[in-house]
Length: 284
Image (tube, rainbow, N blue to C red; front, side, top):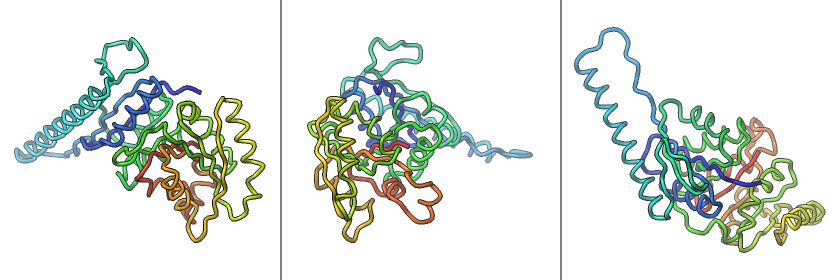
């Protein structure tokens, strides 16, 4: 239950400060390696005869892509320097787990990120409120690789290890998320288990079970049941996270089928679309 390799995909832009900041903050806390994966779209394929003007446009696109990659790498390098994490060159072997590396690839944002995600313990992406392509990467990493994903806010406003809030619904996916978040909870100042239900008695037994599980891992926690009132489960969870000033929200993803959530709505889809104020760790 350790997190020692963190992937932060950067889809074709130099502006992913929230994801970079969160990935480096997690690495610093956990003594982990962070790899930034800059993904650019390939140039359009030309067919038949190519005019001089078309060649010029292609060259201009390539130059712009290279410039964007350089700018993104500089943003990453400055962020690493700010928190004292060394960046390794391509041939360097890490002397300690706490280090960073940079990698570039060309192709589909989602396909490349998901292929790489399998080799890491944790993926840092973002909700659609930050960037649609990062939400797609988060969703497919969860479903295809079963790796936990942390959704980063546009700007990190609190410490990951201040208060960890578990959105508890006793599903297998939620148990996976709790297990994945153990390294963060060991460092947290406090841990809260929150269930959304109109009848608190429905959750008492399962909350007692997860509290016992956490105690076996040396983690003390408190439990609470919150009524949704007129809000959706997703909105209730985000509001509870704000009320408790959670540094990290932990929840299972797609306890119902993905198709059902897409057709009828659900907490996972709501969080993937709207989480913007605080980090959310999801596991499937």
